[in-house]
Length: 135
Image (cartoon, rainbow, N blue to C red; front, side):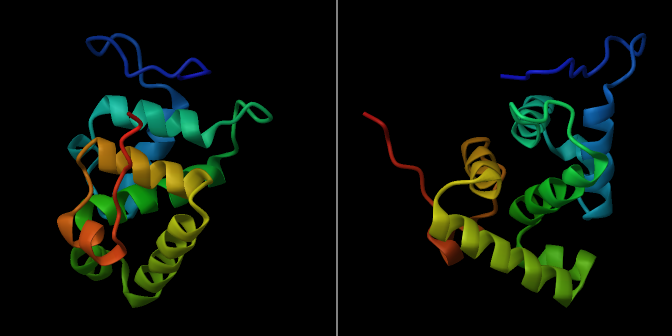
């Protein structure tokens, strides 16, 4: 799924790719330690950040994705304490818009966090998040 040369490193010999470092920095900035998110989830998220039209996205595209991932993983209360009421209100609006649209990068990130079981139960309950079985 990863279209570019994303790399998690290898025994400390090869460094992490720039896209993963940017996502890690965004996660830290949003109050979530990057070690709490599995590397596979981060690789999938970087693939969602990049698209066919722009395979090497600009640095400013990573923090909003990391912020949404942090919101899902931390839950409303902790995210609000870490980031303040204004950022909490903004991210709640993004989640509502993504779920209403049912498509787009934010909806894909929410679905990724749901399938990775990294989304807090209070978020699932408040927004009625679920994935339909494709059987």
